[in-house]
Image 1 (spheres, rainbow, N blue to C red):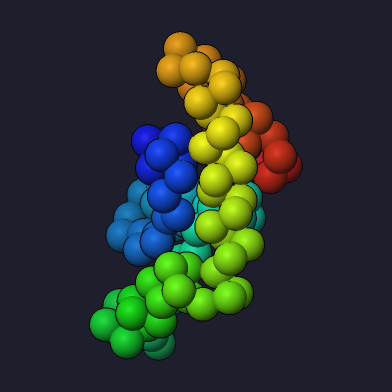
Image 2 (image 1 turned 90 degrees about the horizontal axis):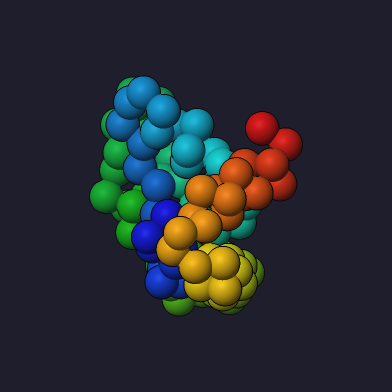
Length: 96
């Protein structure tokens, strides 16, 4: 949540437990992208670089950068003490 508060897109590289779900949530909400694993389940540096470039530099990542800025404004407007409400709203937007 802190990175969204400061308008920083998420580059998700889930490892275990709830992280795969959170990575999909990040993509569904539009505030980041997930690095996909190869057939062996490993992360490849080329794929990591591709996702970083897509989010930070490329035109296609503009929607992610804009969405995370929009979410940032919403979080700042709500204030730190209402962060739980913002988190709940994001989960509800995803229909989870």
